[in-house]
Length: 131
Image (tube, rainbow, N blue to C red; front, top):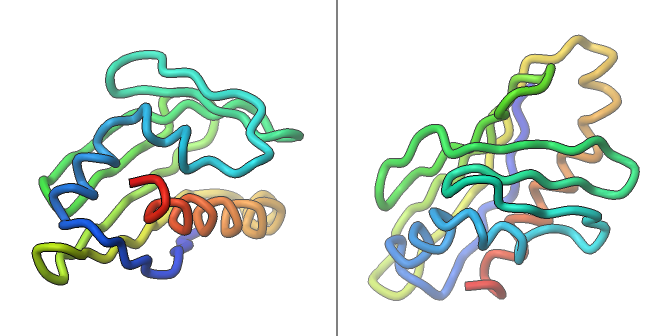
């Protein structure tokens, strides 16, 4: 399964956006209102939970400054990744798109497609106001 957020334009350079998303503590600012838990476990790993959903642990897997950050599942039964692609428009603005990739059976994919689509859209939409 592959899902993408809309491209979001931010009033910051690609480097500034990259620096913000590289600090995993900042993901708490991007979370939806229905978050029930957010905790930094290590410098590159955090756990979060949304009401009615299981806890999810994400870990930084790949970093390519200033254009790409990949977070992946850290443990658990599901293997997936959340990628932030950052493109510089000019010195004072950039564009960010979030992509979710996971390998799920058809029944699971059907159940989680809606909530995950909404989740990554919320994260992306919250980036400009959180920078």
